[in-house]
Length: 351
Figure 1: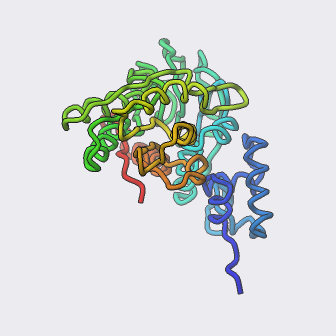
Figure 2: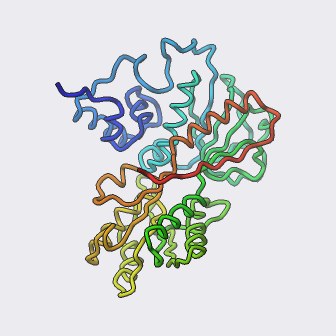
Figure 3: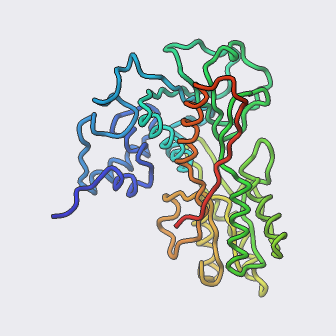
């Protein structure tokens, strides 16, 4: 008798997190049509039938949970002109962070509510219902502190770049450690001549670019050298899509790969670029992981599952980032006077 499919099987086939499947099953708001279709297609293919509501994962009423009137409410404030649905559909690493938030709040018996805004409001809204705390997700350069913010509940800023005046706790991916780990792995495998492919160098408003800075620094410190391909146009981002520009990647990378003294390894800023890198290698007659080693960053299954052989992957532990935000917020509620924390979650090599 074949094993009954689980919600984890659905998530794996759909290329999303368990929390994302839960949101689709429970008809949550801010789920994009594309994600909904993909999850339902995976459920149909696997013959998966959701259990009763109290058996499903996600932030909802459970038999063992206290009544909603007595449950702590945590608000997730997503600051983006594109919205939560776009992030869920077009940015799998963000979707995994949301999964971590949802899983941790559910385990803690808390209720999650979501607010979406494009920019920070001039006046901070009153608590309705009363909030135990807020998690802000996104980037914002507002220079004026909104009125009412000092009266707001404990706050965590997650990912992105907070305003300079934000005095709460900050949690993000350790992008510099991502670059360092990639450089160390390249050297360990014997690669001294490498390429880094990405969209930006590091800055307070573009922390993702610190991967490039750290990769170059640590590679050179270990006796290697890197050709840096930094071009914001390598990614086409619109209100309906977020994808790699295959033509621009090919134009930037192919000339280097055709040289007799070609680089032996390529570090790719994020997984969404890696399929295009594989295509470019094929175009010039090179075999990934044989003729040229590819090191990819994030560990987003949606982009990696079709790549054979698979690249070396730096896992940024996105789910753990979300869980750490919740753990820190719950700790902060009990320690309001403690100094603000700035935590960076270190990456690991994916197994």
